[in-house]
Amino acid sequence: MAKPINVEAQRVCKILDDLVEKLEVTSHLTSELFTNIIAQDLSLDQLFSYELKNQLQYHAQLERSFKENNLTIDHKIMPDDDQQMTDEYRATSKKLQKSTSKLIRLILKDKEENLHNLRRLDDHRSTDMADFLNYVTKMRDLWRIKLSTSLEEQNGKDQVVEELTTKNKNLRKRLKEKQTAFANFQQKTDERREQLENERSKLTTERSSEAMKKEKERERIQNKKQHDKKMKELKEKRDQLQNIYTTELANLTKKEDPENEEKLRKDFDRAENNCRDSILNYDKDMEKNHESLNNLKEQYSKVQEELALVENLYRGKLEEKRRKEEEIMKKQKLEQERDQQIGMLDKAAEWIQAHYRGLITRRAYNKKGKKGRKGKKKG
Image 1 (cartoon, rainbow, N blue to C red):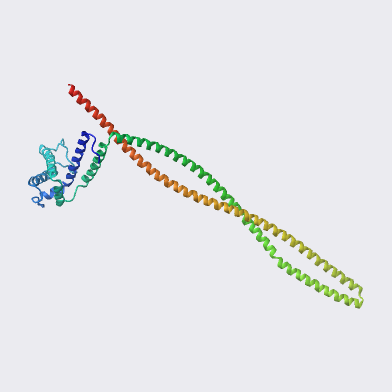
Image 2: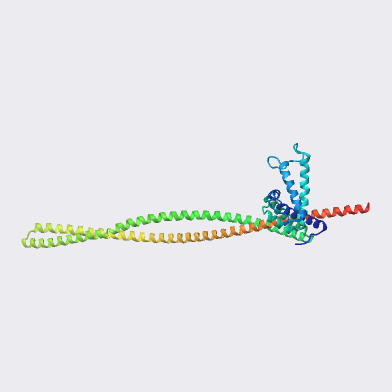
């Protein structure tokens, strides 16, 4: 660690070091320790010097008297101006203060050995005092760093703080712009996604409707077998009639029955006309069915192509969404890291500013002290 920059800073560091040492010793002087000393449960002759042993015993007596007379019902220290406080109680309080100072000085003569022996007697340190000691130690370390900072280092730190502040402002401005652009992009993406969802729903409905129509046409076309069967029956019936007619005509020719022959001929012509009409109707129906089937196939192909385009577009949008979400996650991670860096820079800036204010105060104090000394010399 760097050396303090002047004599006053060295004095302050020395005072803080002494304070930490005294607090460390005080944290071992617990009520349990002095209670055990009074009860004569501990052997002090082999652990401490004669003077320190007597001082511990004397201090234990003062501790007991102080607890009995100078504490309130709530175990709080009674103020000196309290009506119940007597001169004897006040004297006990002052004696305890002097005894504490003397006891700490005796222990600090051989600090390591005496503290080691105290820990052997009673290792229960005061928790509140230990916490306070930690705080004071941290404060001493901070003051030591503060008092060891030179002017050149402070100017360099000021420049770093200014650069970091400017960089922080620029980063915040860029962050705001990025957030605005991201919000606009997200809004447009949501609108486009909603539009694509509507188109997809519409195409799905149309596809279902076309599928139902095609199913009906398929059922109607499947009736062709029944129609073929019926045509076959009609042809067989025509053949039978033809045979009957031929047979009857031959018989009539033999019998020379003109009236029956004419009647049979008319029946035959009528049956043949009916058969021809049925065949023509069937051909027309088949042509219409073929045309309907071709139209349906063309419409189905178009719908399939449109659906394939929409599905490709939808898959592309999903992939784009996934990529955007990954980018958002990366941006959030980078923003968190940047926020952490900014937080560290802010803390560093506050720390440097605090030390700079301390340096300015010390300079002012040094100038004031120099002016005072010059005035005394002139007088």
